Image (cartoon, rainbow, N blue to C red; front, side, top):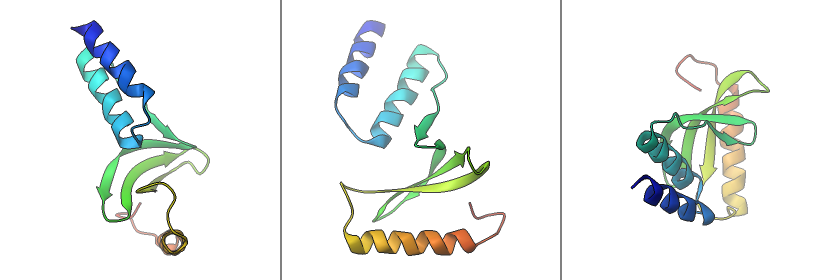
Length: 105
């Protein structure tokens, strides 16, 4: 059974199924084989957990090694967002960067 699961995970990993699917596969493999899953990295960010998702995409709690702090990382749905969506995300990031509160990442 272990070999079948490993083979299935290997085959699934050959397709680009998206960030969340790859993360779920690593967590399942870790649970099945009794290993701690490796941290998921997005560029310089170590993903800690999902915070939520909505119409534009999914937001994750992550750790930024360069800034030495926790951050929120938003991944947009689909391949390449429309220019309006990119501009809206940029404005949202600028507003959120100005906030300073213990309950805001």
